[in-house]
Image 1 (cartoon, one colour):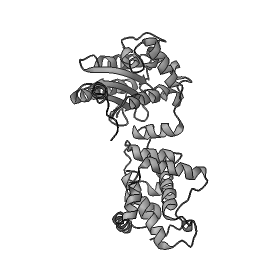
Image 2 (spheres, rainbow, N blue to C red; image 1 turned 90 degrees about the vertical axis):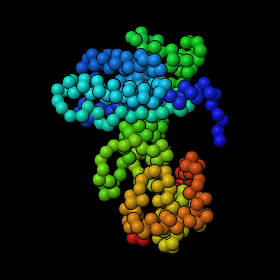
Image 3 (cartoon, rainbow, N blue to C red; image 1 turned 90 degrees about the horizontal axis):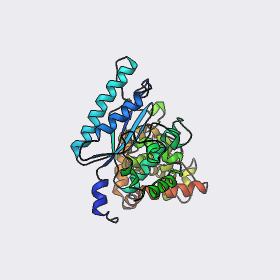
Image 4 (cartoon, rainbow, N blue to C red; image 1 turned 60 degrees about the horizontal axis):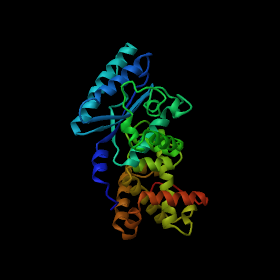
Length: 344
């Protein structure tokens, strides 16, 4: 078990949330000149009740994000509903046409540690830069950062609660925040963040795509795998799992040859499918289509692997360790795959 958080910090952070709204295709949250001001005022007003505290906001044409502390469960639902209702009405009025204003319902992500909260602020500060809306985080006008750093007046937004996360004195806190913001998020960090927030969705080959087209937030473990694969593709993540499994069960390198024993290939595929399911990367049906075999056959093979002690130990390996091993394999040029995807 990890170290326990101090009681005061735990109680505050357990009530901290990152909320986000994404515009439906063809919609623009900032279509009119005064819209950003109206949205900001509404978000601030929604947090004026007792037990609510707005820590950060960023308003962009296709995304709106806020970070808030809300003391009770009903409060978070109230903020989501009240803001969603009014924002959707304004967006539809601005475009003078019917249809949904949002691509999905408001998403709420709990921020359960000081590190998670600071990381969220870092991502949100750089988000306008990532979307090409400005060149530096502080230069974006429709975000709390310009207020927090003292570049403009608060206009109703209180920057002190956020600054208190970085230091007791305002000058010290601003210097600490500025130092934090110099670390621009990596491409891999962006992929994980976008996938877990439902802002991007895993890419799959058309032949393997599910009939469902609803955008969903991706499980953090699956997002880490997909991001480590170098893009947004599920197949890239499966390739990472293949390389790791090959390295663990085939030190001789037979899996890299066309003459690889069929039993070894079957075992490797089943282990990959088990890991993909455990990480919530994709379904066993997807893996079966990927390998060109039947779902029923693969499911039986997966059950066998889970019944073997040595394979259960492999499957119990923490994902972080798997990613570290894969990074080492990549640096050594030892990335491998399971060849001969026949109809096992």
